[in-house]
Image (cartoon, rainbow, N blue to C red):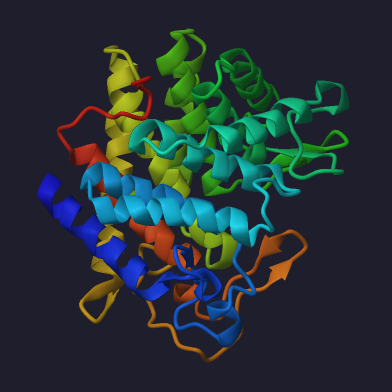
Length: 376
């Protein structure tokens, strides 16, 4: 099965590469992901570019480089990093801590696993997360600057990053402990969205489960502290029961929601490949995580459309994908989030999620040992 998933991941990569990767403002040596396909004029001009979508595009390129090392792709990774900063008006940071956490995770992997020096950017981003920690205000770190909403979507990926970079394991553990004490539903054991002024936002998004799984798995592997693995067991079981009908991770439409399933799959794959231990609970958590990734990936592949021999994935992996066109409403940035296009398959986020899922399926079937939690 390893080769099957390698081939499918390569097809997903080729689809995004051919349809979405373009020079930024026609400048040589640049590249970003056009946010829609087929694109409108404003998309081709990168009038919209969506910082955190580009971070996941970079992460997917790194996945592909680990699967099939290639000098040309390494150039693409470098171009993506350079162009992200250029489009972000010469800066790495923005006002959203979750956005910055996704970029930090991708840059850390580019540095550690692909050998691209990103230390200046990583140090700037680390400083943002460390200084944003405000337990006296009820956090956690907030969702965005000048805000008092503390959520899993910021603390989860920032915690994973701090566990991996700069010897910040203690702070990463504090973030995991804050999530566990504040945002876990006592009935389903799923992760709530966040909290503001003592009032819980009780929404339960798939990607929030994913980042908490990633954080607790990373800490279990890196610290050996016994409190982390049981949290992974509990949450894997909750995702299996509550968020994967018939074994397929729930979809969340287009726009920002298009990335939610892929993020969940990425960190389920981390559980499957990296959670340490040989107890029955360790084995069961890894097996369940692997099963969820593979059953979701098979379903997404079965329900894909094909254009030019390459896949178009749907936002819901348990139903047939729709072919996108330039007709209908387009994704829009509204109150800090990106809404979905009328046909969600048009959104880069949805296609990145499908690609991420194929890479996750490859990772859980590959013979190689995961490099994610190594310090090499």
